[in-house]
Image (cartoon, rainbow, N blue to C red; front, side, top):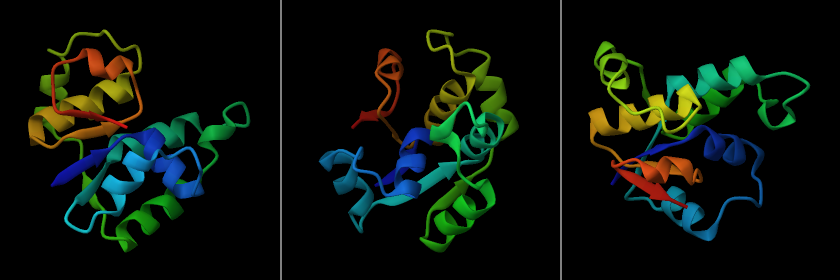
Length: 128
């Protein structure tokens, strides 16, 4: 199965944190799953990378290299994603999370997330 991981999961993977649920570890570790990250996640990390946000203190270039080295697919933000984003209800305040959901919908791959607000949307979402 092809899976798009949300930004929080990518940050937890980068830190090898215990916050990852057993379900998340199982999905991420399953050889039959193809894992993807979005350029929108890298952009979000770069923007939020400040001393006030210790959860975002990650070197974006190093994170990207490690993800690619571990066979994660890189999902660019396309014009079709931006156009579809305009039609997504703004129930979630974070535009990066909404973009990830829009990409998941457009590309027909489930978004793996820990975010309860995203679950209110109809779409391909796996809550871990």
